[in-house]
Length: 178
Image 1 (cartoon, rainbow, N blue to C red):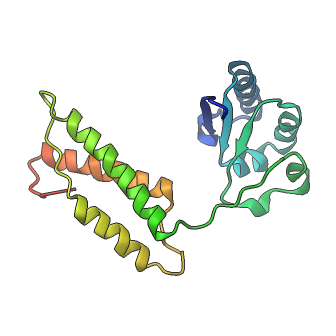
Image 2: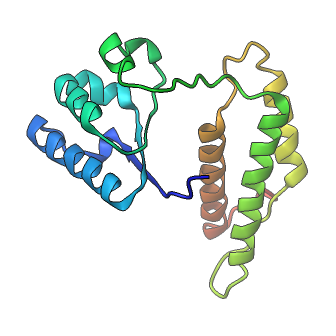
């Protein structure tokens, strides 16, 4: 067990000139190592495509734990692959996993609902059965895997739905549940 905090970095967090990206990445790598964090470079394929040689050099000399994510593993060439110790391929979630992710996000909504009991906050109504019914229906209607949601998409859908529910409540909307 590592018990190390995660330091997530995505491309859009960096500056957009080659010099400033190199400085930003160098500082991120340095801090992650000094703080003993696990570094997560999300959308690593964008880093690689734009700043290939600089990125390879940083990968070569980084001594900490680093995760690279990509939705396009085919863009990683042999020079990058030779610097990677472990490749993980994530498959589509099965129905029980989708349900578990939905239940986790429902629990987060319950926590938001508890916080909303504080004075000055609008009440959040959550239709748990309807949400889980949607999860099962959506999974079954996308049997080939295309169109099925991953964990990030599910979380984003919950965040957007909660924001819309609060907004509709603020403007006097009459929907019964989330």
